[in-house]
Image (cartoon, rainbow, N blue to C red; front, top):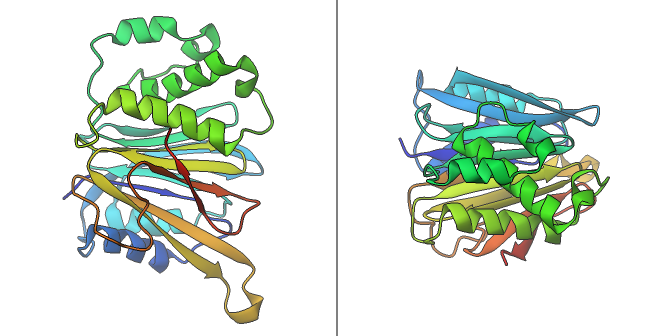
Length: 253
């Protein structure tokens, strides 16, 4: 099975079948009953970011994700042997999945982190360090970014792009996909081989439909399909906010 990551913003509840079907469509293959995957998820309840991690039957795991009553969901889904994870710092959530190579200067990267970020490190995996490098870049740009009530999409996209270029120097190299969330803002980007697609759905039916739901599905390990309307082009990030009904694209500077 190819390495997969699913990163989604869901205002309201997406029907379980819709989420499972969207993921299966991205893989271009049916879900395999009894197949086990690692699912790390971040979500908000009452404005508080929370994290859950665990190994699940793939199909049952997607249904559990879809039933979460949250306005925003990030889920990193992969084979248990691959580098991935969902992490939190204050109001920030980050989901990352892909083939993150071990940094030769890992000790130096850790030592260079501001003290409050070093204190937040737990497992010290490559995926956790990836998140803290994003936070470190925000701190270097302006320490107030780490405690600000809001963060602009342009700032979030710029720091995400910078760290993605560091872990995937070659755009044709192994794929990594990441999502950075800050309150009502969610930015999703991919670098390296793979695809990032999104699907917009209406919650409810007809005139009573109350919100626009957006599912973003990333798949790593293969070239993106050509000319798909919902494909996020190479060099672009998918931006979702609670204030905008539809997703937008920003250039990864």
